[in-house]
Image 1 (cartoon, rainbow, N blue to C red):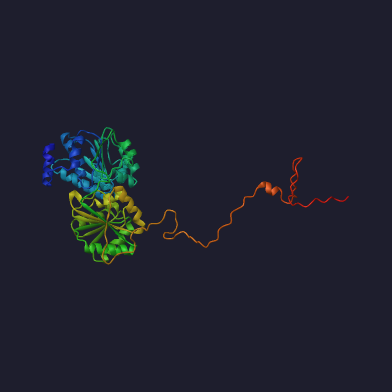
Image 2 (cartoon, rainbow, N blue to C red; image 1 turned 180 degrees about the vertical axis):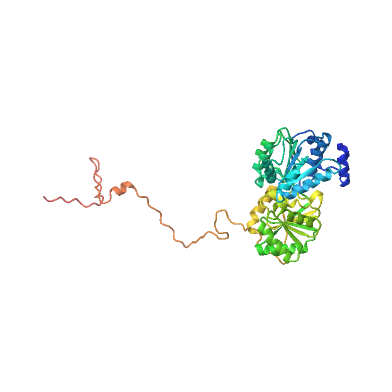
Length: 446
């Protein structure tokens, strides 16, 4: 129970208003060391309550030690705009009965309007690295009083090319600060350089990793011959599979738009979400999805991290994720907080090896599924011999083949006597010569 952790009564009241009474595993493990000011690296499965795991200790500290004249006291960096809005909303809900203010900063909205709001010095700032760096360069943000830096989905920020921006932002922060790093797929080898430069003797709380199997999610694959076959398979899956909300992932923005048009042609209530859309459009799409005005959302990996949308019970990888970590985050949009969910991946011949590598990485075996009437010809790669010879052919054994004549070794001494007259052997003195059949030598006439 949260009452056992002795949270401030105002935070407890906010939790009660949301119907939250019991901390999750990651919240229970994080709260005490975070309140002690330790630098932490936390890895926990998606949907486990990581956002409240870092917001609760921040708010508790700020309530206990108010600093009304300070600049921003906590900075939370996130990889996407949608995640920034979601974290900021969660912060407002937890701080509803306090005087603590938060603000989100990201691209796609007016820069001047954000700068005007930043002059009010919100205590908690939730931002994406690119837009925050612009405000730092223009002098709109003051991080000299910063007490805590939170890197949410740090590995994803590095994957998106924000490594240099994150380091610049960390350098602009006060050096005597606490740093918290959270992710569902924390790989210390890949982000080791970031840890060394922004953290001080961090304590690792690895409650899970990318290989942690999500037992609440049924993971299946359906084999496809080509793109047209995939389209027919997807339409039938959405027709015969019961679901409340479905999230379909592609690897490119163009593919997302094309697939959205196709599904709308087949009378599915569908919308598209990707990085080329401006922020008001993206916000409207997500709100319609949450309100069930649309039932299917086709998206790129911009929707794979951190988004918490209730009722998503079906995830389809129309194009297979590029890595095991990306696959974990995609399917993590369903089966959240112990709920049941289904993840289906459409696999073509070109994606077979990628699918197998993800199976090995996660140490799982995907269930194979077929759709009646749409069985394809591709059933996985055929086995071939490693020698490269054609499978099924035998060696030729022809008994009528004439035997090869044995090779005669040519000796050098035999070659020296070619064309020379052989002389008879001369016996030792006292012995009779042996007739060797040589003709007598003729005496030359003078």
